[in-house]
Structure formats: C-alpha cells, structure tokens
Length: 329
Image (tube, rainbow, N blue to C red; front, side):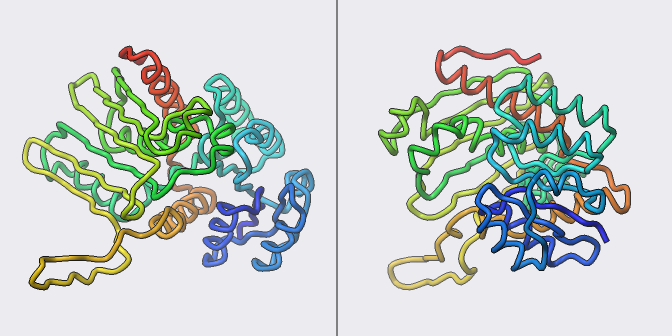
C-alpha cells in the first residue's frame, strides 16, 4: 500500500483525496493545509491524519506527496520533498517562472525521485481516445488541431493577481493538449487577447478572452480559443483535421437525452464546470501516478512537459501584449 501525503486541502486537494479513497493500492495517509481546520476536515473524511507540511515531508513512512497548494508555494515544496526522497505529483503550473521550474527539475533529477505534472486533461477518456486515434493514423497525417476552452464565468478579479493570467492559469492546459495531439513541439506562436467579459480583469492587467495559433516544424497548425464566459456551461471541445478525415470530441452534457418538438431539437446543457467534466480524468491521472510508483509504468506528463507548457504560456502572453510572432527554440 502506497502512503501519500496531501499538501493542500482546498478544492483540488479534495478531488485528489476522493480519487485515492477509491483505490486499493494507495491511500491518503496525511493531510496538511495552511488552514488547520481544513486539513482536519479532509483528513477525517479520508481516515487520515492532519499533520503539518514539514512533518509529512519528514515522515519516512509517507512515500509520495500531492502538491495542491497555491503555485507560489510549489518551488519550496518540490525542493523539500525531493530532498526527502518523496515521489511528487504537482498541480499545474509547476511555477510561474520558467527558470524556477528548471531549478525544480534539477532538484528532482538530483534526488532521482518520480515527478508528475498534473495535466489531467490528457487522461480524459474522450481526449485520450482521440489522441490514440491520431497515433493509429485513423485520420492520416494531422493538419489542423482546434481546441475550444471556455469557462462558464470569470474568477474573482482578486484571483487574477496571483494566477499568472489567462495564458498561464487557464490556457496552459490547452497548450499542453496541443503538444499532446500534435505529436511535436511548436516552433512558432502568435496570440491575441482582449478584455470583453469583466472590466475588473482588465484593470488587473489581464485578458479574459484569448486566442493562440501554433505552428510546428512540419507545418501542422493548432488554434486555441479561450474565454472566461460561456452562457451555456463549461465548453470543452476538440477537433482534429487530418489528411484522411476528422476527429471530434464534443462537450459532456448533463444528460444524453435529446428532445424533438415542432420548434426543433434541443439537448441538455453542458456540465457546469471542471470538477464534473473532468471527474474521470482526475481519477485516471492519480491511478497513473500510483501505477508508476508501484509497477514502473512510464510517468507522463513529466516535469519537462510542465516546463514546455510554461514556455508556451509565457510566449503567448508576450505575443498578446506586443502583437509580435514568437519563434520558439
């Protein structure tokens, strides 16, 4: 049985705790949070101990940690957990600084501990199946990837201050998905951003509406569209056009019932937000992390994947601000 410490008892910590509670090969042994009552509540629910972060990292009986704390804390926690020999599962982004991410990866490599960047969307059943169809050449050679990602409503303007902005906080998932589906790294990027949803977000110096176009060395293209507003639910769609056909992943709806009347056809709304939409993906990514440690399954997404997504997010933010194309090394 793998013993795992949850660092962070907020929304994402609760998601990962619920995933571990369904597993036979791992368990959440301890929980920490800067709000002790939150750690105690989640620990009680999971049959775990509420402990300090320092004690979890020092405990030799705890094999791995799940870092679900604010991004600004990741750097220190990664270094401390790596030095203690713990396997590390880290929420995105690893850090808001590319240089600091590189330092984290060096610490992980030096300690020879497993490290996984939590890009959960790779584990969504529909998206994973779509990627396998691409790999199996079902639609021939990929030509254009289109990714649509729109939140039902914007976050509080206060959140924007520490989030890193729409490209690093929201679109980073889609930038990783672009690499996952294209099968090669982009070499060119252009981006544009506007503030059309909430003026308070613009006042913080961020965008709430953004687009990015990526191009690979072989000429494959990817278009990403993000918005902090979707009046019809959580909008998550992907289309891949290839030389032999097209693949498409639709939104997940509240139910699959379609109604037809004299005024036309109608269906249920899209699921309300990421917790419902990606519930299966969260379970699958945690199972993958545990399988790597217990059975030696190859770890993905890696720390390098987290780094490359951050590089793309930085380039997108810069391009949106100055309108210039970015050439990527």
